[in-house]
Amino acid sequence: MNESPITRRIRKAAAARGFDIVAELPKRAYDDTVGPEHRLPEVGPPDALAVLVGNSRALWPAFTKACAADPQLPELPNPLDRWTVATLGPLLEQAAADVAFDVVYYFEPPPRLVGMQKLAQAAGVAHLGPAYLSVHPEFGPWLAFRAVAVFDSPCETRPSAPPDPCSSCVGQPCLPALNRAMALKQRATWHDWLALRDACPQRRDARYDDEQIAYHYGKNPAFLQFLSPSQ
Image 1 (cartoon, rainbow, N blue to C red):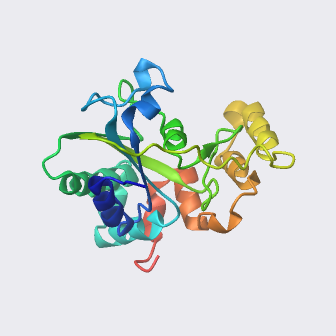
Image 2: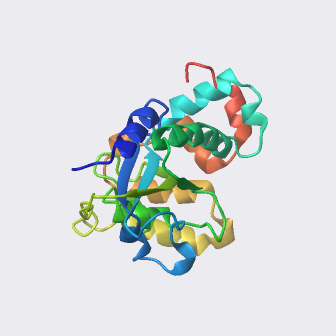
């Protein structure tokens, strides 16, 4: 793969900070699959370089280490979002050198709302399954997409479709789990939504640690205050 030097720099720097999923694609490879309201920022030509950044459970040790080093971080609203921006922003600037770029984070509302899962599929990173789970060949459904940066630079990569483990999945157990959670509507708890991810048989060995699951699904930043630096 003729990967851009920008992407290589991002991959090296991001991995050291727990963002171990990095992939590039031409901007139009994603834009052509969505409506105008979800397209990537207008930076460069239609085949401009877009770089997706995400993580497996590797993010958790880096994030909790940052919380231990800065006790005020867990007390702020949306500490993971803040840390993601504070970490990836300078990293992307350094990787870009003098190339103009724009970055969209996963939590941004319209008109900057990007379909991160569709983006991951267009980049050949993860298959979007029938229960709306992104399934990665190495991490199964245990991953997240944090940001995408678009650079004023051409992209020569032409991604292939990601492997599809869902079509041959016996019984597709994710679908009954999704139906149960949807049927509960307002009464569904985070445990019901966790059951959807747990139902996927792909790469169970990549499952998040219990502490990471409790934080992501329980949405309780106070949980971070009880973590030791070693976690």
